[in-house]
Length: 204
Image (cartoon, rainbow, N blue to C red):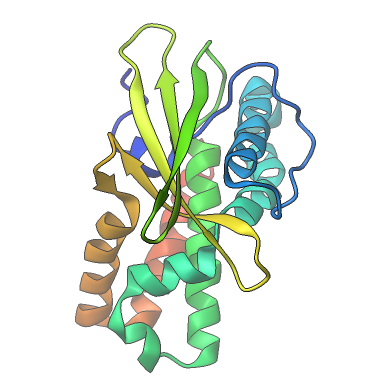
């Protein structure tokens, strides 16, 4: 269970064996978007050793960036300073956060070891729809992961937050970290920090 540590808050999202590996349109129902993303991730894990980090990154990037609404997530994670940033700075932040997220998945999920991930249901929330899932490691206790889904400007359902054990918000965690860097050192410092972290994960 060691490799499913703190990173689980964001990167612990897989699929049950047998899911179709074709891309799932973002306009699909919320649970189908999560299942489709799961399928791509577990497929990359099963080929993980052969692909290496660069191969996993390349394979996962389109699926991750389709399933997650990174512009909205970045705006929330950065906090009030987002409105003070220029359009170019906002784009740099979104790009850096997106790349960092893909690199995290590619680094953390190197192989498949019998983990089972199930979508157990969904329920409406004040902010959208919560898709409920459960991770059962090969040897370990099940972990609950909930995904907050909202429609984007095109009306497509996309992931905007991840909750561990139904309570720990990925975006709240990121906001505390990101806003601290921005307040102390500025937007460029946050972009550089995310880019550097992404590079450091590369050799794995």
